[in-house]
Image (cartoon, rainbow, N blue to C red; front, side, top):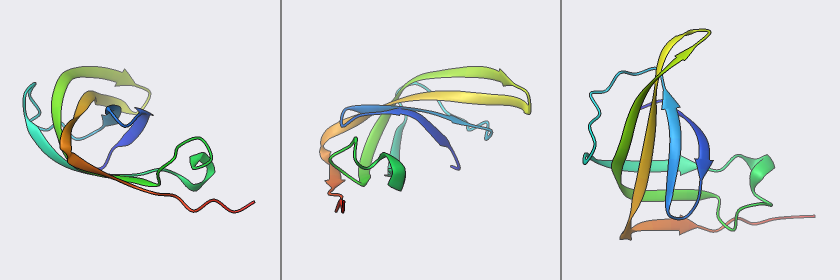
Length: 88
């Protein structure tokens, strides 16, 4: 799924996508989320890989048409946080 992440932590993420899914609460997804280079000073990781559970699905109206908001919960023990190398 091509999506934009709006909020992320080591516990979960909220993202939007133009793809209608199907997505349903309780679905298990495999995720690979890269933290943008400009945000890596904020996060102690550069990428999150692993399984997540869909906890909320909501339609969102935008200027470019309908999108979907997805709230994801990363599944403990099934997620890897890859570290970032930060240079001054």
